[in-house]
Amino acid sequence: CHRHRSRRSWTPLRPPARRQPPVADAKPAPGGRNRILGAPRIRSRQPEYVGVDGGVADPSLRRRPVIDDKQGALALYEEMLGLDRTMVASDAANAQWKRNMSISLNRVGDGKLALGDTAGALADYEEGLALRRSLAEADKTAQRQQDVALNLEKIGDLKRGAGDFEGALKVYEEMLTIGRDVAATDAAKDQWKRNLAINLSKVGDARAAAKD
Image (cartoon, rainbow, N blue to C red; front, side, top):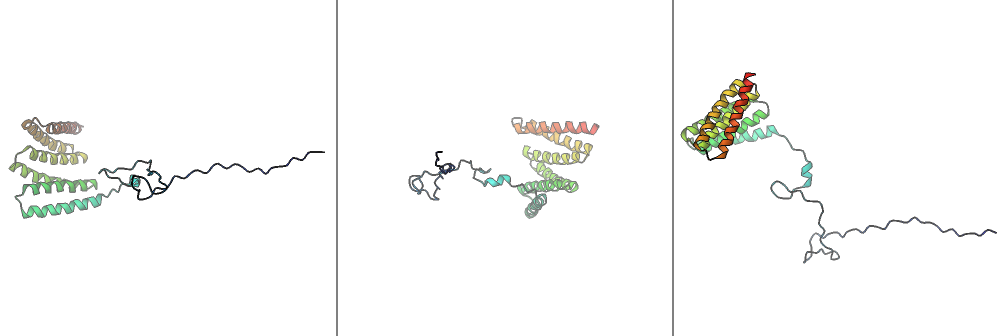
């Protein structure tokens, strides 16, 4: 006779359950340990995202698209310019307020240029240039001269971008003359030398483009 073997019911083995780490309490107990079972304080392994100001920022900010609101920026620059115009009108002899107004004019011009309004941008740059020329006449310092050169550069860049290479060259050459004078009067300052090098490069590029 055949021997009957008893069959045992087979149960698949299950992997051991993973031990869940203790949940950190919101307020650690004295001694730097959490209140739950005396577990050590749990720290995230993920590095925190540090903002540009040194503070901890939301990591999701890295995934948010940058809003390019050129029209909104222009509106703010124009509001700023309106305030500067009011201040200059109340005290026309205040040189700092005039310089602030020239800065606002440049920013409004930049905003218009970003929206394709080259004529409007040129008008703002030229108004700012007139202000800076008057300030440089009254105060013949290197910084005042450099302010004039900066506006000349903006006007030259705009004209060159619009295809007016002859007009750009004329403006750049005046800018270069100022750059040479400033560098000669204060030869120890490296910034003036760097500015002069940029001026030379722009004049050279404009001359090459004007001949083509």
